[in-house]
Length: 90
Image 1 (tube, rainbow, N blue to C red):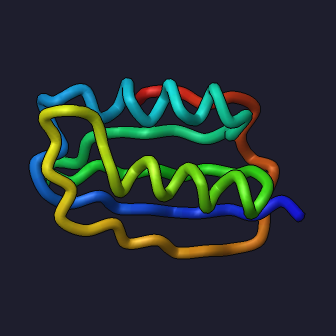
Image 2: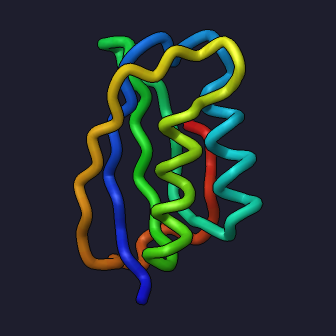
């Protein structure tokens, strides 16, 4: 069943290639949505996909790329809205 997540990643997650890392994994897993840096230093992700695939994606977000220090990943789950056609870096 397709689901939707809205996630906030905290820690040392800007300037370390986190957005490209998330983009690469989203494309590999067939997830649609976006990733972007927030002004407060966090990274935001909105994504849609199969629930098991999203859970795998969240695990990757918790790891982050080499050089990142992920302190926290807050995830809000919801019903799939079918609002994204692809995954993009904003």
